[in-house]
Structure formats: C-alpha cells, structure tokens
Amino acid sequence: MIQLRAVFRNASLRAEQCLSAKNRPTCPEQPRAWISTGPQQQHGTFYEFRTYHIRPHLNAAFLRLTGEKIHLRTAHSQLIGYWSVEYGGLNQVFHVWKYDSYAQRASVRAALAQDPNWIEQYISKAMPMLSSQDNEVTYLVPWSKVQEPPKDGGVFELATFQMKPGGPAVWGKAFQAAVGTHTGSGYAHAVGVFHSEFGQLNQVHVLWWYESADRRAAIRHTSHEDARVVAAVRESAAYLVSQKNKLMFPCAFSPIK
Image (tube, rainbow, N blue to C red):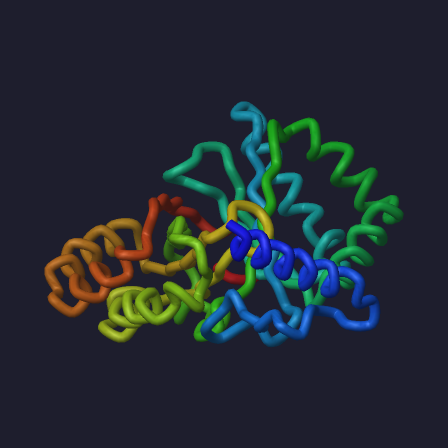
C-alpha cells in the first residue's frame, strides 16, 4: 500500500511539473503522435458542396431563375458544376464551388452580402423557393484531381460512402484500388474523389460520369461480374459503414456538363 501511494505521489508531482512549465508547449516526457499515418492535405484548396431542397411546385421556376442570374454569382468565385437531382432525392439541386482558402470564401460571402444586384435580382427571389439548404466542405483525396468528362452530355452519379474513422490515411489505399479498377477498366469516368472536412465526417464522395442512365446500368451489371472489381470492392468494403447515391443531370449553365 505504501509503495502504491508513493507511485501516485510521483505521478501527481510529474503532472504538476508539466502544467507549471509555462515556457514549454508540452511536457518533455510526453511522446509526440500523429492521427494521420498517410498522405495529408498539402494545400488550402477546398470544394464546397451545396445541396438545395426546392419547394416542389417551384422547382422549374427556381432552375429558370438560377440559369438567368448565375452570372451574378460566378463573378465572385469559381463554380465547378451545377446539377439537378433526378434519382435519390427529388426537387434538389447540387452544386460545387472551389475556393483557395477559407479567407477567400469569407471575402466572397462578404462581397455577395454587399452586392445589390445579387440580392435584389436573385437571393430575394430564390430563397422563398427553397425549403432547406445543406453544405459540406471537402478536399480532394491526395490521389485524385478534378477531371472533366470526355464529352458534354450524359449523366452524373454522386456516390457517397460513410467510412470508418481515420480518413484517407486509413481507407485511402483500398478505396483508390476500388476506384482505379473501375476507371482503369473503362467502366466509368471519375470526375473527382472528395473526402469531408466539415459536415458529416468520415465521408468520401465519388462523382462519376456516364454517357446515359441506361449505359450506367449496363456497365454496373458487367463490372459486378469482373473479378478485379469484385476483389477491390470487397477489400474497400472492410472500411465501409454505409453508402448512398444520387443520379443527376447537369444544368445548361454548369461548367462541367
């Protein structure tokens, strides 16, 4: 018992010494550790995913207004793509905006708040048409980049995977192999692979392009019989919690279409 008390006293003394050391950021006896064990984000560029839920009877009016006035918004920052959701969420639009830093985004939002044309011609009319809005900040995974489709037209699938905690450092290699078998075999074109930073954490999104919805269905059937795809997907599924997807059509004013 006496020895046990001595151990506790020594531990308490060391803790007090660490707390009182004002000139040291950490106690010298504490080892440094990193959560990430793989590639990390090396630059400030991020992509904001925005999903707007439109009141059903105003869906056509919202899309028409947005098409007419989107130039007022793109004058402030870069729009990557703007889509209308066809399957996986009715009366929704999904759009992606690129920013070089959080400071840039803050300045853009401040400028929009002071832009009378944007407020009077668009926001004041568009907001009553919406029932809700969602946004999410994402980064490209270290091994992906935004790649436009080989041609205009076609459909886009936003596949969202809820992964086990840890980020690309944990699931990146297996997920890269799963995506790579699809793209390398010519089954699909990946516009980009993104992981969440703000919003629902531990999510990874793959934005796919197909020539048509029927072409996607045929490719999905064929790829599921490909041993390479099956093996890669099974390996990445070990890190998977759940998944969902949306099939979307690009709007006429979308840069990626």
